[in-house]
Structures are given as C-alpha cells and as structure tokens.
Length: 220
Image (cartoon, rainbow, N blue to C red):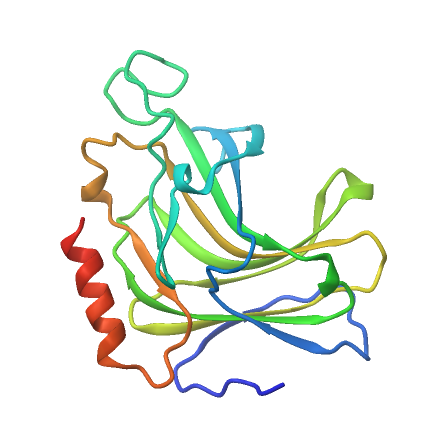
C-alpha cells in the first residue's frame, strides 16, 4: 500500500503497545464510510468542569455534514435553549462544554497501524473552539477507557496525518475521525464562530477543490 510523502505535513503520532508485524492501513475522509456521532458533555469552565454524560448523537446535530466529499464541522447548536438554564447561562452564553466526535469505528483494524490522512481546506473557528483529527482505541473491558490515542490539528491549507499502531488484544475498538470542542452556541450567531472544512488529500491540489470551497462558503 502506497504511503504519502508531503512537504509541510503536520504529523502527530502516539502509539500504544506496538506489534512488530502490524500492517499499515491508509484511511481518509470518505463519505461512503459508516460515520457515527457521539457527544460528551462537560460542565464549564473548560479544564475544571466535571464530565457529566455522553450519548450517541446524530451527525447532523453535532454538526458534521458532508457535501460531496467535503466535510463541514462546527460548534454545536442543537441543545441551545435560552429558557433552559442547564444549557444556557443568564447572559445567553452556552452553559456546557460540548465534545463532539464524528468517527468511523472499525474492529478489523485491531493489530494494524492506522494512517488517517486528509486535507484542511479551511479552519476559521474562533478562540474557544477547536477541531482536530484523531485516532482512538477504546477497551470495552475497561469501561470503554481510551487506551491509546493520537491527534493532529486542522490547519487551513495544510494536509493532516494521524498515525497509530493498535495493539492486537482481542476486543479493542479502534476509531478514527474528528473531534470538535467548545461551548454550546446560539444558532442565531453561530456564523460568527467559524467552522472547519476537510476532505481527502487532492491529487494534485486543484482548482476544483477551491471551487467546491467557494461554493460551500457562498451557502453559509
């Protein structure tokens, strides 16, 4: 399987227990895959607020939405309710920290080295909101604890790559995808907070992708 060699590649790699015979499996931003959504909810302030709960989440409500092979990620708005103090502070700001995960879960990757690559067309998220690519390995036998993980930032105009070797222990659950963090946002003003657009690495980087980007921006 061919490998990617790209100038300026942002690479973050953190490995769990490494298998000397692991094969490398290349994965990318593919809308044909069975993508899932999951939300973890924390109390504010970020960094000191406790974890509250987590639940499967409709991808469109994260939000994480494909247009063709381009994925748009942004701040969560579907829980925002100004009449509910659980979700919204008296000043109108979000009262919860939303950790939105959009991912593919594939147990056939146990014992393999996963290389997750793509391209960030745009990341305009403002301070207080982040989105990054990830690979995680969860262990149901340990209460779904994350036993290995790796991340890469999404930087406008740059490819990203995350690489992780998954231990061959039976029962582990590898995931790869994107994680977007920030307080729940007012849908009336969410456009001011920015968003991220990602897709597969263009071969070569072409005017076609720029045209897709322009079309998405015009539909904001």
